[in-house]
Image 1 (cartoon, rainbow, N blue to C red):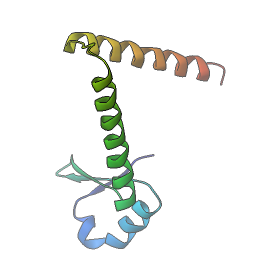
Image 2 (image 1 turned 90 degrees about the vertical axis):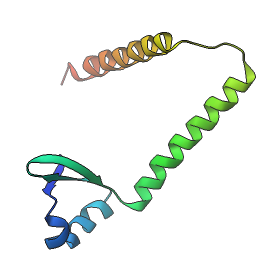
Image 3 (image 1 turned 135 degrees about the vertical axis):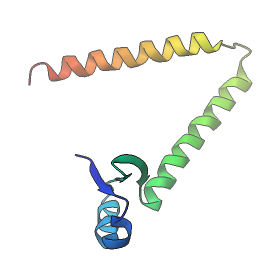
Image 4 (image 1 turned 120 degrees about the vertical axis):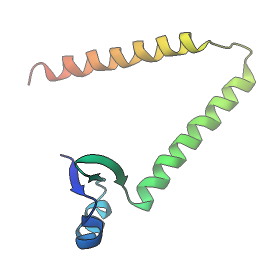
Length: 97
């Protein structure tokens, strides 16, 4: 379940927000009923950034090892196919519940 709070809670309920993000849950903040930002712990932020950096480094290494290149359209089509495949597997796994 998402933890959605008004941005004013940063001032009035900071301790509760700190406890929530400390437990590994992001807090979604709204202003005038619209989402404006997400607050996460420093540990979660670095885990996210480091994972992205590792994947970019791996992509650079693979690109250096091959001359094969794909167009945006080819990559986009492959990503959509993979996402659809994962969604199909997810729906199949939960169908018997």
